Image 1 (cartoon, rainbow, N blue to C red):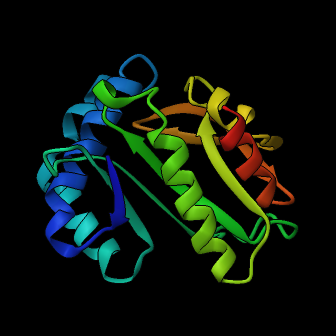
Image 2 (spheres, rainbow, N blue to C red; image 1 turned 135 degrees about the horizontal axis):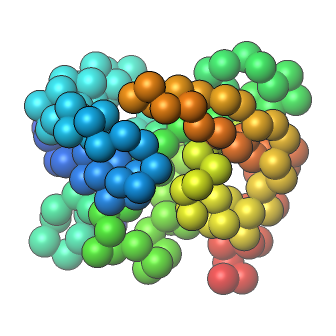
Length: 175
């Protein structure tokens, strides 16, 4: 497995992991109609624009196929004054979950955030998404609950924060 900075040529592969991730993770959480409207082509276009200016890293398997990705940087909402950094997205293909790739990608994003001179971070996750336990295991403290609407359905999003992202390194190494 290898982690590297994403390039424009990765947009289609990132889109596939993204769409497949939504369809497996959120199949019993968000309306099916919303998931059906999510297409590889639409997400590819989205990722082409994100890759122009975003901090995106991918995980590859031994064959060089993209099996996960993460994005992060400066916290986007401005709602959390104490927290300047954000882990924006983290997706791992279902067949590769629970192998440590998420931790590797989080570590890479943290290193990028630290290079910006930032030592705090947030991540948002839907309340029904079991990945919330991953962030809790990394020491994330719930700092807020936000109501969001996805496909016409109201859901709760949990916001986890770290006041010192360097503490995550120890959690990663111990697991």
